[in-house]
Length: 201
Ligand code: MN3
Image (cartoon, rainbow, N blue to C red; front, side, top):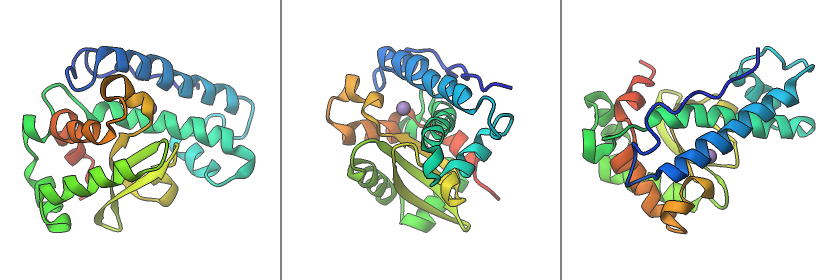
């Protein structure tokens, strides 16, 4: 069965003023849609047809003959996680942090401020297009960046949150100020309840 583009889980103008309707229309309806439809066309008639997106990502990572499929499938998966990671009225400023997540962040990084600083530094330090991730790895929270579509599935880590730092995610709203976009993402857009619900217990 072909993969489908999940609908945006909030209104296109729901994240304004932090992420504009114009950005979301292009990013969801054009970019994400293209990753989904191109994945479908590339896997049709191959041994990957019928497999889950996760299995396709793991099977094609670092396979030089299937780089095109990996790029499209990983980006389809990344955006499937990205949209439900945000919500209107979200962010640390809007909703605070669920207790268990706040405790894990404090235990690992020392506190919200240190976590935020490290996440922003990772996201702004990622050269070119890519993602910044908060993952559980061996039971520990970790932050790291990845290029292009590479994601935590490639390292058998459990993704809690990914921030899209491709220019299509922020350039209309923030121009070259990637750091301001990432701060707004953490402070004003992330659905921290959704992030906490992904934690393995
Ligand atoms: Mn994107």
